[in-house]
Every structure is written in structure tokens, then in C-alpha cells.
Image (cartoon, rainbow over all chains, first blue to last red; front, side, top):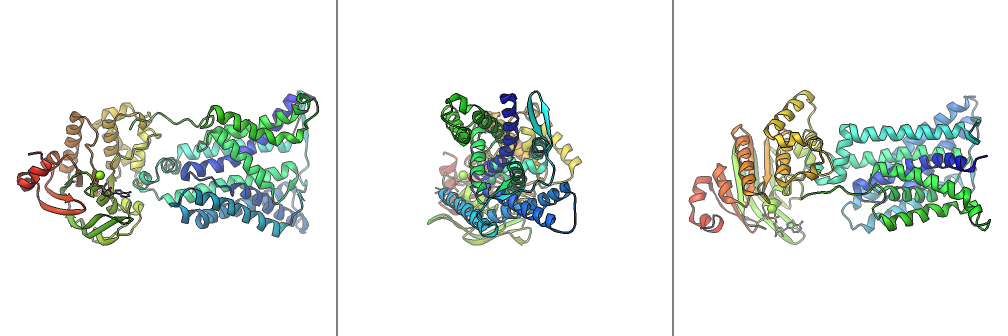
Length: 309
Length: 235
Ligand SMILES: Nc1ncnc2c1ncn2[C@@H]1O[C@H](COP(=O)(O)OP(=O)(O)O)[C@@H](O)[C@H]1O
Ligand SMILES: [Mg+2]
């Protein structure tokens, strides 16, 4: 088996999930300069809600096909997370819009802890396994294997990201969003309802997070009330790596982080003579972040255009 | 009256920037508001647009009170501000900036037609339409800001120091354009430190000092008023 190719495939799949989550961080930061630390928890809620629906449907007498059941789970998780994202912005962040920067940051951490605890109360502390109701098929390519789930995650994330890019760059709403990100006051002088743009930004990011949450749950076959923490942290790293506030940067950062992490995990044993095992893979995300930020403090694509006053 | 401000008071924390002023603008008028730096001119315009909260008094526009309405709603009703510093979206292209001007409108065909008209007025903008607006010179940015405001189809256009930071040649060009727009029937409130130029093209003028309106007359009378000549026309 070709380790390099295999880890590259795994990394791209993982990275496309990171990218989906990173987009939520970067879009909100782009407009509010706020790091929505609760965003990772939204992915967790997405996984949990879909899992609840999937288990409910499996247990029911409806006898639906597996694909249909998963589909229903995702379709419930998306609006649930959208509503949650909307609510968080409305209740926790909007009242602090003009407060010192530290206030919404601490609130974000607070919201994140609240969501973890609510999830723990509802779904318990134990790992919940994602039922494998769609049979996993594996395909051989050039000595590496790739599963139908991996192919699906990669392609579907790609489509979602392409859709988002089109939305942001080709539509009236997207233009208003970019204008608001540059200057909310100037945007409002164009007749843009800035509060609506901000709300929709949270809702969009949360929808992507919901999908990412289901993907992570299905990919690892597990869900847990704490799963959003590390995922959120890594996605945040991906966003910073690409240049926070920059949409293309979040995608690049996500994919890059996934690949680096997978390759690192694949080779760390060899590199350290077996001293460190692949469970050290989480270290790579943060190591890469630190190294990149030392050389490019604004991230890979986070360079500002030259502006003349 | 198209616009009427009554006893308008605006404060920043404890600082009274506007201390109870009254003014009005009739349909089709070009009215200027002149005064030294820090007099409260920008604050007055911001209050009209809902960018700063009004502490006391009221703003009547089209026979409706708009005093505490949000900015986007006031803009949708046709009051459009070209702010101090122009408020260009520097990372958006010139064309996208113009499109933002027409944000509240949905008559695509007319917008396209009017955009072409703006480009014919400002050929420089047409040449640079795909360029990021941040790369334009100060004068070009002011043209873009004016063109963008025109695309909003304003019923009342508020201009905050359009001559600021521009070379003399550019200043006279911008003022020509403002006069041209006014002659087409646009109602304009022009805020300027360059009192001479402002009084030349305006119908009426208000003089503002430390948050209060101290003089109000026709532009012709103001420009012959000894007090104004001494304080603002450098004589
Ligand atoms: N954001 C602000 N916070 C506090 N004070 C302000 C603010 N903006 C303006 N001021 C003060 O209000 C007064 C009027 O300012 P401004 O309206 O900008 O005057 P002008 O446009 O006539 O130069 C000045 O004393 C200024 O220092
Ligand atoms: Mg001013």
C-alpha cells in the first residue's frame, strides 16, 4: 500500500471538512471581526441532531432505505443549526456589537460551554456510534483505497464551496456581504440592512457547519458532546492559516491542514523512530499554524490590497 | 419642505456636537452648510441619515418623522449621503461600487442605462471599471462616490466636503458636476469648508459655529455679509 497517496486522500477528505467549518469562522470574522468560538459546537449539534433523527428512523417501523434515512438526518440538522446560529447572533453577539472586543470573545466561549453542557444533558457523556446504515464500499487506486463515503464527502464539500463562492462573488447578496465586511457604515449608506446581512452570514456558516458535523460523525463513526471543540479549534487554525476573513483562504487552509495532518500522522512514527505515534497528529495543526504565522502573520492569502486614501 | 430639522441636538457622550439647530430644504434647492472644522457639520449630516442617534429634536422628511429610523431605511426613502472620506469600498471593483449604489433598486435595465450614463460622464471610471476602487486617485474616488450616489436615484443628496483633499483643478471639476446635477432638479445639501465655492453655486446657505447655526440667508447675501467675508472668505 502506498502510504503517501493513502494519506493524501485521507487528508483531502478531512481537509474538505475542515474547510467547510473554517468558512463559518472566516465569514463571521470578515464581517464582525469576531471569532465565533461557538462555531465548533454548532458542528457538534449538527452531528447530534442528525444522529438522533437517524436513530429514530431506524427504530421506527417505516423501513426507509439507508440513504433516505441519512438524508433525512442531514435535512433536519441543517435547519436546526441555522436556527441555532441565528439565535446565538441575536441573543449573544448583537447586544455586544459596540462593546469592547473582549466582551463578545468571552461571550463566545461562554456560548460554547453552554452548548456543550446542553448537549451533554441531552445526549449523555459517552461516545455515541453513528450507525453504518449505508454500506461502505472501498475502491483501489494506485495502491491506495478510497471509500464511497470519502468520495462523497470530498465532492459534496467541493460543490458546497463552489456554490458559496458563486453566492459571494456573483450575486447581489454576496456583493452586499463583501461591502458590509469592508465597512458596515458605508454599506448601510447604500441601503443595505446590515443586521440582516450579519444574520444571514451566521445562518449560512451554520448550515455548512451542520453538514460538516454530519460528515465528521459519519466519517469517524462516532459523535460526542465534546467533538466540536477540537474540530472547531482546527478549523479556526485552518481559517487563520489561509488568512482569516478570506473565503478562498479558509478553503485552502482547510485542505492544507487536513493533508499536513494526515501526512504527519502517516510518517511521524518513521520520523521519530517509533517514539511518537500517529495519535500525535493533532499537534501538526497547531505546529503548522505557528510556523506559518511567524513568516506570514496575516495568513497565506490574507494579504490586504494596496489602498490609496 | 422636503426636509425640516427642528431643534436638533446630537451628543457624543458628554460632548454636545450639535446644540439645537433648525434648518430646512425645499424641493429642488441647493443649500450649503458652511463652517469651520469641528463646527458640527458632519455630525448634522450623520444625524439626518441615522448614523448617530439624535438626542433631542426631530427630522421631518417628506412630511414624515424619520428621527429614529435606521440608516438603510432612510436611504431607501431617497436620502443619500456621500460621506466625508467618500466611503468607497476599496476592495470592490469600480463597477461593483456603482452596483452597490443601485442596491435598493430592482429596475435592472434602467440601472444599466444609467450606469452607462455615469461612465460617459466619467470616462476614467469606465477605463478602470474592473479595477479595485482602492487603486483610484482621490479625485477619481470622489467621482465614483458621486456616480454611485446618483445611481441610488436620490430625492435628497447630502454631500460632506466633496472638495476635501483634492487638487484645485479636481475641485472645480467636482463643483461643476455638483452644479450640473443640481440644475437637473436634484435637491442637495452641501457641506463645505470651502465657503467661497459653496456659496457660488448654492441658492441658500447656513453658517454653523460650535454646534449652532449663527447665520442663515441667501447665498448672495451671505457672500457679501462682512462677518462671513471676514471669517470664511479670508477677507
Ligand atoms: N465620534 C465622535 N466622538 C466624539 N466626539 C466627536 C465624534 N465625532 C465628532 N466629534 C466632535 O464633535 C464636534 C463636531 O464634529 P464634526 O461634526 O465632525 O465637525 P465638522 O464636520 O464641522 O468638522 C467636534 O468637536 C468633534 O471633535
Ligand atoms: Mg466634517
